[in-house]
Length: 410
Ligand SMILES: Cc1ncc(COP(=O)(O)O)c(C=O)c1O
Image 1 (spheres, protein in one colour):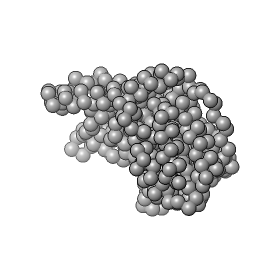
Image 2: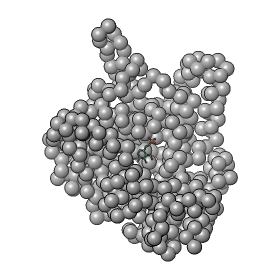
Image 3: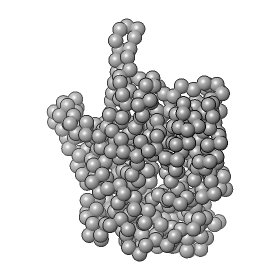
C-alpha cells in the first residue's frame, strides 16, 4: 500500500528519451553495466567523463605540480562556477565551491548573526546535520527553534508558515527534497511568504537532493543561500559541493575565514573579499571540483527537465510495484514527487530489509530515524528503505530491484 495515491504512470517514458538514448546513457556510465545501482540519493554512478576529468587532472598534478596544474586548468575552473550557477538558474559569480552540501550549508547558516530570542523556523523534514547545527547555534545564543507543520499533502504548509512569520524570525531553513521522503517542498511559495511577512529573515534552502534532478530558479525561489552536493543526483565525485548566495548574503561577514575569503591588510586589520567567494576556503581538491564541473555540464547538456521527467516516471513505477507487495508501505508524500522512493515493511526492521536487498546484488540504502527525527516521529516510523533511480536506470534494474524485494520478504 501507499500512504498517498500514486497516479498510474504512463506506459512509456514521458521524458522523450528513447531506449537507444538510455542505452547510450548506460554506455557512458560504466558502473551501470555491472551493477544494479538504485542508490543515487546516496551517491550516484558518475558518467565516464567525470572520472576522466578527475584522473587527467591528478596526472597533471603529478607531472607538473599541483599549483601549476591549477593554473593550467583555471579556465575550466572558472567554467565550473558558471555551470554550477546554471544548475540553480543563477550566475557563476554567486557560487562558492565547497567540500560537501553540509560544508556549503554551514558556511551560509553560521554567517547569519543570531541573538537571544531570535526565532529559527525549520521544515518538518529538515535534514539532521542542518538541525544539529541550528540547535547548537540556538543553544549558544538563546534563540528558539520551531518546526513549521506539514499540510494535508505532506509538504511544508505555506499557510502555517505565513502565520508563524513575524519580525522575530531570523532564519527559515527548508530542505527542498528531503533525504527520507519523495516529497518536494514548495520552495518558491515559501520564499514569497518569507519576503512578504519577514523581509529581514534569512531563507536557507538545502537543495542537496534536488540539484541535478530538478530544474531550479534561485530568482523565483528568493532564497539567501542554496546549498548542494556533487555526488548525489548531480553525479559528481564525493567530497564536492557548492553554495549559491544572494547579493544580500554577500554582505555578511563569513563565519569561516581564511586568506582566500579575506585579505590581511595591516597587522590588526583585514578585508573580506567581495562576492560569494567569501564563503570559500583556499585549499580544495581541484581534480574533484573539475569533476563536479564535468558532471554539471553533462547534466545541463541532457537537460534538467528531461532528467526530472525520467527520474520521477521511474520512481512512480517503482512506487506502484512496491505498493502491490504485501506488507510494503510506500511512504512518499506530496503532489510533486522526486526520485527518492521510501518504504517500510510491516513487522520488519528497515535495516534488515536493506541488507537483504543488497545481498541480492541491488544497491539501495537505509534512512534511519536519526537522519530526520522530527519527520520520522511525526509519522511513527523507525526507519525506511530508500530506493533512488536515475536517468540511466532501466528495466533490468527495476526487475532486479523488485525481485530482490520480493525474495527478501518471502
Ligand atoms: C537533504 C540532505 N541535505 C544534506 C545532506 C548532506 O550532504 P553532504 O553529505 O554532501 O554534506 C544530505 C545527505 O544525504 C541530504 O540528503
